[in-house]
Image (cartoon, rainbow over all chains, first blue to last red; front, side, top):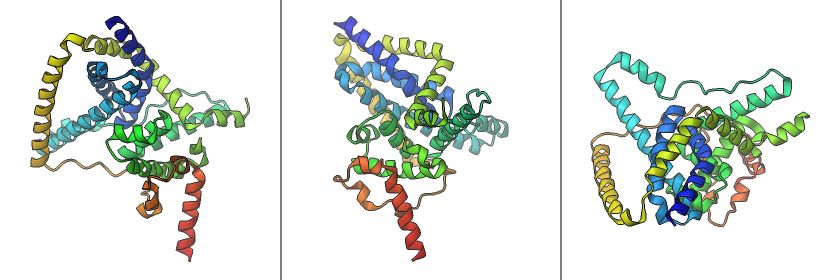
Length: 185
Length: 124
């Protein structure tokens, strides 16, 4: 029985870690931080998963992940505040490089006409997503990419279904301003 | 492959899937190691209750520390985004209504209509 649980858990993590990493990287705008936060979330999930049915594991993983992301950003806010207070100018410069303001890493592209346009569009989409406020990012990614219902999204985000709809609407409006009709999928 | 087919394939969800695969490929070894570490932490059935209690106590302690910290110091506010600010009035209140189907909110024609209404009102 325990072997079966381990196998199911392993399969679930392998099938979901890719999307979870991308989700976290969009939220934090930094791959290394995303890996650290995702590791914490995966460990927290593995410790709790036995108490839930397998159907609920995806929701559980993203709920834990969102909490870890929030905790991380809160700690970062603290760290930045302490740096300002202590006025370590060189440390501040280092923090500036690490705080996720670095340009989005772009995949290599070839120069053939339509592939180049497609890559530009993909880059523009990634940048536009990262510019969204946190709650709009979460609502859009969970609903549109991870295909969760409004109810599931609301539970994961810890808000009402009405709030999810509002965040989603604002995300659509903002993305459409940046990307036009393409965002309609 | 003509441009129409490429555009049709490059929908937002597929785009995110491709980006996620590329990101995972760059960090494949780390992801495998992370998965193994998480599996090693999976709670065995007989120790569940004691881990729950220890986990609950640790969670409570952490919550108290964070709450005290937040109360003592003003939390950092999120930096304003570069996206042009969406006027809250552009999103009508009825969006939050339980009876409004989400399929309506995910139809781009709605936002075209909202933008048109806003333009008409400004001109009127």
